[in-house]
Length: 315
Ligand code: PSU
Ligand code: MN
Image (cartoon, rainbow, N blue to C red; front, side, top):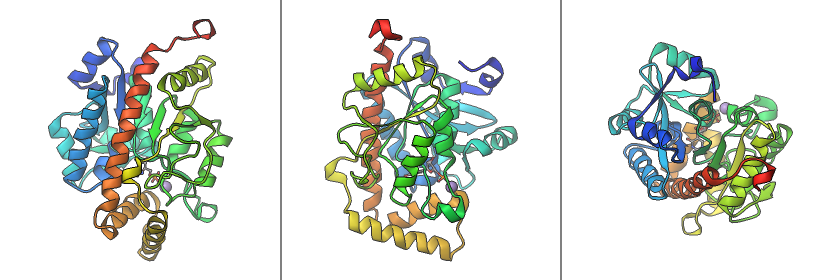
């Protein structure tokens, strides 16, 4: 558990505080996906549905955001509305956290930002859509998401549908390997590719059951091997998009981003928004379906971790 000074910045919602006091499993959720990853009002509706999926599975959801100079662990309906509807929400990764907290402005946390806050709050499982990664063209642009460095050092398991094919998935997996981040997959051997099920790259370890996943994660952390774990699970087949379609649209959106001089942290939101528009919302439906599925997998894992023994003797 982090020290008291860091934890003084945390503010728990009543339901999350109650769950923690009762020792019930908690699942963290990010807010960048709400503020910058999906259009209004689908973003708010999805956030509520994802919270409901986690509750129905027996865990407590904790959406994480920066509001009023505090790290909020769990947000109210009004705060969710603010995150999803305001034009003045910062996208907060590790670099941006002190700026937005110190100013008291509103911030939506990325995978990296949410991992930091979840770890401070003592939450071990975090559900998102897709992780950031090494961008195509990174050998020239150096655009590598801070999510990957965070996974290297912060001990939270991130449940995702892989990484979007707007990234270089091969290089993303290489980067994770270099930093000792295990990539687990459930339901298939390969790492998932967000809108589509198969990235064409094998995950490191296939573990289909929540109990096995929990055992792996406990073992890593028991050994003092600090850092995150990626758990990839593919979008349900009925909601999957066609590979050729998504590849073509991705190329187009990236070309538009380059032509318009979009760079840095604005690229991912720009490309997501363009793909949603170019598919008349079909990609959004896929995005929503995969996040809900991730929430089911994440909630099961949180329950299993709550029951997983510590140390070799309890195996
Ligand atoms: N992937 C999505 N939707 C998102 C993101 C990724 O499908 O909203 C967000 C996540 O918050 C992720 C961030 O952490 O984008 C990565 O941004 P960047 O590439 O600028 O690090
Ligand atoms: Mn980037």
